[in-house]
Image (tube, rainbow, N blue to C red; front, side):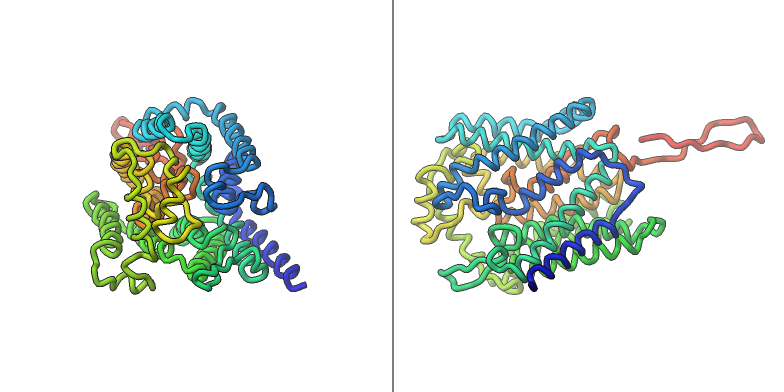
Length: 464
């Protein structure tokens, strides 16, 4: 009975959040629900896991085989996304022209499946990864990409975070797991692992903080108090869940990236590129110092962690001991296929993981030094795009800078550059160059029309 009442309360709360945050003036396409559904899937557990279908014996087999049900669902969403983009072909062409480093990186990932031990598995995963780009393009080619971005993260947060609270508090068999090795209970919410719940809270938390800042600063926003309440509740929920699931990586990323977002709102920061660089790269430097340089472990100790980063250093050593082609890697998302995963488990002494717990190391073992170099080029071009966005539209630029910084920091201790993960979605939103034709809030500048003496001058607005 208590579970039923709690479920009804949460459902009513979700409906209330959507009501409070409604914005009739924002016009977004119905196709926006395609990336919203995609986001809900990648930020939670698989449909087959919810329905307890297609059970697989262990992590190694699940990582290799996947699920036919999931493949069908993602395939339908990709086709729907491509149909939506077909109507916006002129915008899509601009995206590809303006984002050459991203296109080349994706093409290299596809080519790398040729030297994978399981090329068919690799190409299937690449198709899913390319589907993530399709979803982001559906989002950013909307007639109002800023409102579409806001709605994507708001709708995801309004659904995922309250349901996670419900599962943790009232349905412990679904919302938590017990680890017999450490004899601890881990809270997972709508996901399958505590760090995955932390990542979901990180992405949703930054998105809702962005909307909260917008509502707070825009005094002319209709029903401003309603938006403040809705996003304030969700931000508090994200922080509570991060504390509950004990995901310190995501919590620290949210605090640091959130600080970057707030500082980017200060005119003295965004007025000078050097100030922006200092804030963003200073935040990244602090994270690197805490994780790898601070031998005393004082900063990590504040988060309740040791210098071994909860055993991650052992995983890194084990992964590097499995030799792959240093230039080309094992092939796109292929390192953890076959006997390598069993060998890493044997060296480390525990199993049930299939990632290097470091995004840069994950790129290296799958794509080699060439992949890391291309990722570095992507960083440079993406950061420039974020700087441009910050000058043209400061509010949107703040989100991009926060996502960019969060991605760089998060991947120091988690593999966030996998193309089916929520961090990759946020990273693409941060780095993709939006062509002026699809900007909803373009920079406008008064332009005076010359006139005869004594005749009042008129002002018009021109798009820069």
